[in-house]
Amino acid sequence: MVVWMRREERNIRRIRSDLGEHNDDDNPVPTKRYRNVVQQERVSALETCDIIVSQAEERFRFTDHLAAAKLFRVSSFQEYCNRFPEKDLASTLNTFKSEQIYAQNRA
Image (tube, rainbow, N blue to C red; front, top):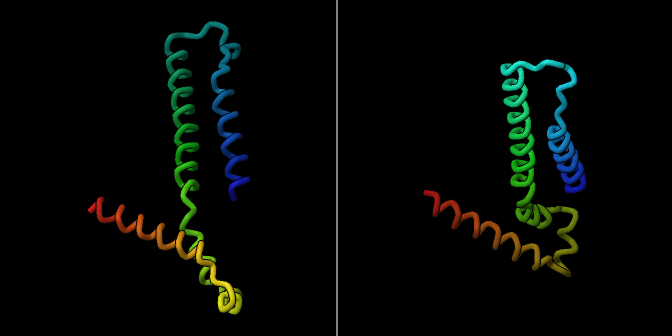
């Protein structure tokens, strides 16, 4: 997932940088209205790229809650009798404790 995310982020950043290389060759005598429309489209495209990248970073940055899933693997229960993943448990407790504090502060 992280590899895919980084690749997509690079693709969006490449598209964004390509938007800066605008060329008026399609219209040899651009009117003021044409320039305004092109400029507005460019600004909208840049904002869209920025939103996509920032949303992706925000949504995939927090993955600490996934440690809890490791604790519920039925196939690992037998192993837990001998060696329990204390680190994953501590991480899970810390994560959900932080989430509770965050939820209380928002209320």
